[in-house]
Image 1: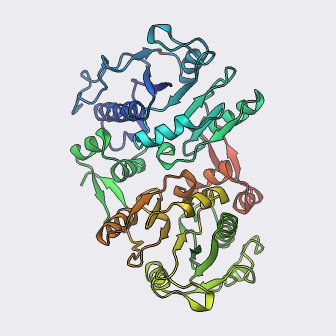
Image 2: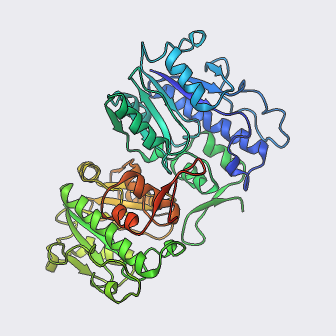
Length: 231
Length: 231
């Protein structure tokens, strides 16, 4: 199945600015993207990054970026560049496909959308997710968001603004699509804020976890809870 | 399967004190407990509340408590009272059972432990969880915690302090127990902080969600994200 992985190259992961510099945020976002692309491929999907600009833009220009080696290899992962807002760009691919990238659109084949900051995604969970067989399969994110979608109904369109989980349920109902909710901690855990970093270190050993460790983050159990921080 | 549902009657849900009075926190905690007990029963488990004091204690004494009707009926749900710390109390039941409550201990039958603030638990997810067939099955909570456990190995003991998820993996390994991790957003979502309340309203329609709505909480989409608040 074609799997879109939307990625914003502009000031990514801004809610991590308390703990990471702009360059670090970009490098960490690339590390998470690489993990997601790997999990999608190994889970049986055919990943296409849907980026707001070419993937190598910015990384080497940003002062303080500790590592540019984590971006997925542009030769091995197709990148579709579209600088329009997320909802518009995704709906355009769902409706019309992107012939130059080999995506035909949901009229002719199901398409999935998996967010680029799902650092906890594994091949196993992606495989189960892509195999769920309703017209629309939604993996909710915390806070009413939608972290991953499988779309098999030609009339379905995304709306990522606000409570997108509830909106996607409503849209599915409006068009008579069968819908299922995919219950996964791994797919619910988008990494946005400093408190999300502990999930990456506790539950993964991919490039994002390596990046955090190399950047000096450690598990801190000192107050009886678990946190990650740079000592 | 016998399912322990630990519940602290003393200042429950203290991290909600920004948005709820002490009486409201106790009533809300009781509503969540009732939802969890219902989900365990309907999911095929045999729930036993492991409480630090009798369940009706406190509710009617607390000024400002809006509702005492949500406590599970003491006549229908067995309550084991043990005022020792959580880890000690759970390990005592695992090791020795609680004959007066009909719990035999893990020497003779598997036992599960499901936290009382898993307001998103459904019969379906509890059923799948109890059916997972390893010696130890762990449903992680956010932040390295352990939200639910199935224990089938007689030497397993819990340790809820700190990064209990990692500790429970290590303990399983030390005793040669087979272990699986149960990947569920619903079971990972313990309700501790004000930002957790949105999960209850978005994903459930049980007593906890009703309680929040009756207490005036509404979904707020005003800033493009989803929150719940009392307007």
